[in-house]
Image 1 (cartoon, rainbow, N blue to C red):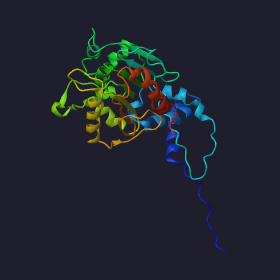
Image 2: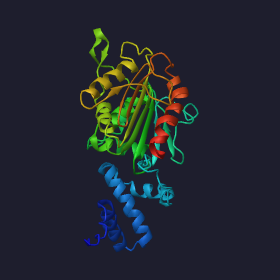
Image 3: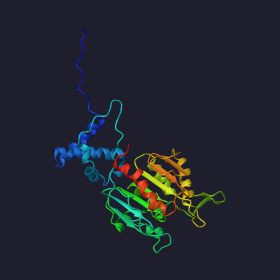
Length: 309
């Protein structure tokens, strides 16, 4: 009879080895073994999700992932879980001429929301407000955090109308973009620049394109709705959104198609964590905040952070 050598003990997976390495480091700092193991697991997930979120994220992740430590029911054979939890934002900043009552429901459970109201032609205007946060290092987000009382950690930037002028400035520096977990714009893609006015081609907003390229990888979220409401002699939000989509498509894969769970837009582009939704005249400019934004948050934003299938 042929005799077979006993099977060697199973080798630890790369993930298990990494967790044990980090757990030893935390235990060396005096942390209990159980807590060290939890911290190690979350430290690994933060690293896999992207180095950009490592700073200030660990404590928030530990708090929000405790429920996941309970044993889960086994998946059916041949099937794996499609639920993925992302680092929890520390705050949502709503910017522009919109109040909490007007965007009721456009929020994340348990995450504080800060509103900073401004308009396109006020004193200070939204643009001037964002520029007042510019520091000598070329960044605006640190000044924004101080002015709005936002804690350290990943942020969600949400804006309506002229509030988009703040967001596009906050995204201008890659160091600031790295601290933003999601951008959600409610008819807030506006510019005064044309690429070809005769053919109604708006100029793309470079910082929005840069963030969208990064979000297309799937680690961050970028959602923008737009309308065809007139904007004086300037491009409409929909025209600017189309310009962003054109430029994005030249750099990463961006497909046009429908999106389930939301009212049908006239056109949409997406890929990874990017959703660009042109609603044309189907919603008024104000309706993008009061009617559409809560639906967008329910269908896209909350599932993104609370577990997506």
